[in-house]
Image 1 (tube, one colour):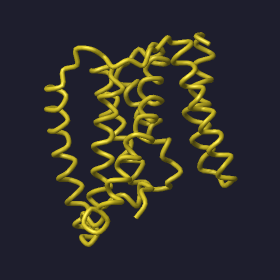
Image 2 (image 1 turned 180 degrees about the horizontal axis):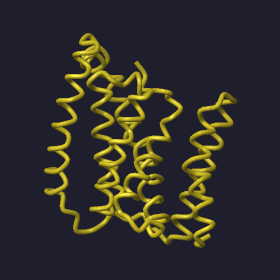
Image 3 (image 1 turned 135 degrees about the horizontal axis):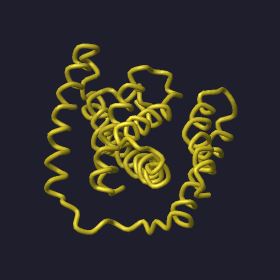
Length: 208
């Protein structure tokens, strides 16, 4: 399972074939089964092949992390507020103002049950399995972001693909610097939760 050929086939199946499969029209329960099997495989490989202990990294520089994340968040917040206001200002912060209970519930479910599994697959697993296959760090980051964007292809929305590609670059850079699934999951949760809060949740599959 550590050979280059095996890992390339694995990459194709997990990060290309399955996401494309999800764009096709067939039973939703079958799609969920495929996704669950894929996730179980990823966890198995991390535990048994890569010997990942799923421990929180010690000596995390929380101050530096929050400073960097805050700066990036401010930029994201300004751009997205301007976009929503320009496109449909009635949607600006509509969920938090009209359905605050739903807002809190969705943010919790999204952060725990969506963000962390995504980062476990697309950062922890991807970096441990495939980083050694690339000579160029820039190319590796770009491929990771592109495949992360491909995972959202089923939304069939070009803006979603662009946002997830840019987000993928940010998350990949954070993980490369910190090697922490926890930190990159926090960053991912902040940006995703903000998009839902600011009024862009519908295009990202959040309930209205």
